[in-house]
Image (tube, rainbow, N blue to C red):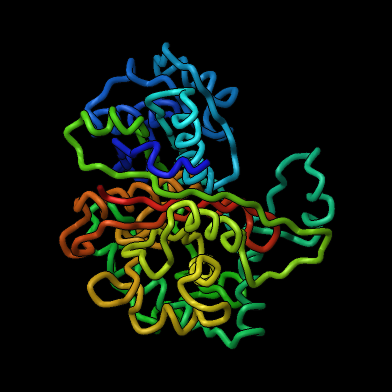
Length: 390
């Protein structure tokens, strides 16, 4: 049974802070929840479904539901697949609403890794003593950066992808971020700036890596009839797909991601093709993340991502596929090290015609948001959502 169009995104809000020195994580959740409800024209008493991840303070959604004063909840979801969680939550909210389990779903993200000086990219980190894969990977110095660098190096080896081609992804993000007053990095950079920046993990340079930021965001997802009663542009959830990609006992190919599976599922449910998409929000923890996902989502053939992103093809107003017009994780923010939420929010802005005029895609009616959570070079979750302006 297709559930395409059974729910709409009625509210979206991104926290303006990038460093929350004097604000708790719980308060950030409350502020983004309030912002999204205000955007939708609803109140907390309208919310009967709540979605967050295990990164929220307390026991999944329990403590946050209490803190936020959500007293009428009928449905809870704390599925956690890293940065892709909030794209996945859009699909789960769609399912819950289609099944009658809730009418108004609230999804929140918040965190303070920058204020807490968390070493997120280059320091080996264990997920916990009982995690089965850590004893086999931590001794070899697995970090976030080198897990992605492995993918980049392998892609270069197999397909001839170059550092200059990867750099074009950062260049495009910087062209967009210059118009975002909240973006952490607003300076427009060149290919030369990227490839001449310090090497972090060969072949990834500093400017191939995303920023670390505090903040968060929230979404309000409702039944169609509720969305149509509100004075907001209608953004329909047209298709959704989710998947995981695992190590498979070492028999793995580093040149593709879980988007190979989640993307086709979303396109099939939506009844559209990659060529129909006018704007794409693509998870950009590193430049290589974007390139591989673009291939796996069907925007170009496998191995042709380098050519696809080169020469400004991702720049709004210039290229064939405008992406991450808020500056993305590479330049704008990566709240709580989980960027899926902001990918959905910017897609909503584009469909509403509320993106900055310098990057707004004219007549945008069909957009895609995709998230990757975990490590591209080991195991990760993927979630894809296709949204339509009605």
